[in-house]
Length: 335
Image (cartoon, rainbow, N blue to C red; front, top):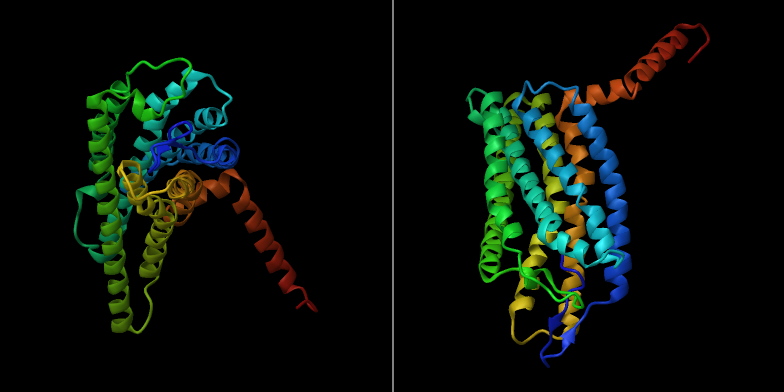
């Protein structure tokens, strides 16, 4: 998440502020919509998954994504209130020290698990006869715990080292609250997180290419499509769609934005503000991941679909409609 109202030094050395209406009205309003939808969907997802046993590895991974999305969603209200200027300085400090760190922690945990889901689909369709520890339920729980532990180890120091005192009359950026060691750790953790994104992106593209090639060869050999192959393609395609919509734009624009923040010349105030707006809108797309992940649950997890239909009584209604149609079609004179 961004700092409060970020300001930068332009080439002339004067302060450069983005449009206040965008920062305090437009962005908080959009985050509010994402929060309402995300909280409802992830609350329902958690409720549905509570009735689904963790007897398969990909269900374990999906449950971890649900937890990460829900924790990420719960950070939105504090950001909304802080950015809208409705909270006091202590709330703003809390956003910098804790909720922003939790936001990014769960965002990158979600990215890692999307990569693992892609790997799980890859093994299922490309190497169905091979056993992988990623597909063992016991091992998948250990892997999940390790991912949370490692990412917490990377992120928690950003909370601890954001420990500088500030003047009550000022409105500091999050960077101003960090000690020298805190800034160094923050930069290092940023590089690690960007590396995680790049690795997962490359792996997902590799997995998808391998699955497509496998399905194509199967089609050529048997002169017909494989239902399992088409299903697996659809499953991993849903992962790619969510991944590209939510995370690729933010990481693409993050590089020029970071350069603009550290460059001593070459960026006018307007350039810096435009990059800030693009960065904030793409970060909003990353936040919207909490609303799009249910697409993956629905397409990838048949037990989730069945339990969802059961809890919403959709399956019973479909059966009643089908039964009525069969009875009607047997009546003479009816088309």
